[in-house]
Length: 215
Image (cartoon, rainbow, N blue to C red; front, side, top):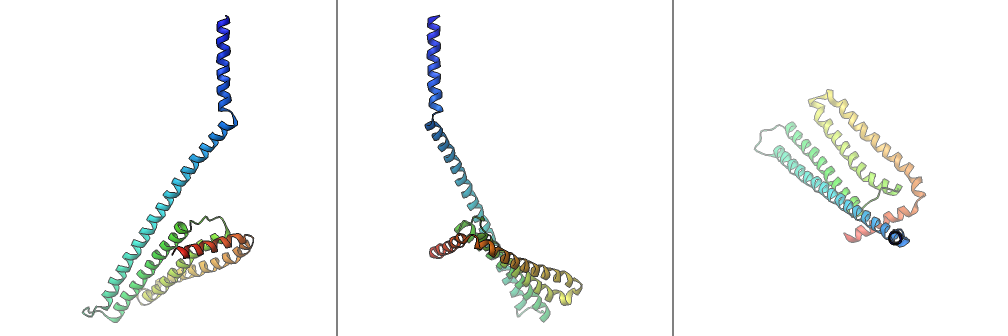
């Protein structure tokens, strides 16, 4: 009986020492540090994956822009070929088609540049009014200009071919105007929010200076 009692006491002591070791503040601190390190590694990996995805999108935008530039050149050459028996109106149509393709190419290239500068170089975190305004403004400027040019091109194309479709073109132009108006209202309302966070504006200026220096 005494031997069994001694073994039980020794076993309890060992278990107590093990529990004290693993539940000590130092052990808990090491476990917390290990978990934080693991989470940090996961976040770094996800961040790199997002950067790689953004680079892929930028490359595709650039490829689409180059393809549209080539198609616009072909379309324009089809309209100015001296050997072609085309009327002036047909040549004008080829020129308008080239302008439309160039507009879309400009949108693709500008969007690719915006993603490159805002998501890769600056690594923008959309968490402040200044960053939101800057990020959205670059996209909206391109979209409004593209819609305006496309509306103008469509008016010239449909004016003689299909005038019954001009109301649809007018609706696109009105949408571009409403988008521009909404953008102006957003900037107006966002100004008061930016005044509450002057450090965000300074951070944005510092990022611009850093990107200019790297360029």
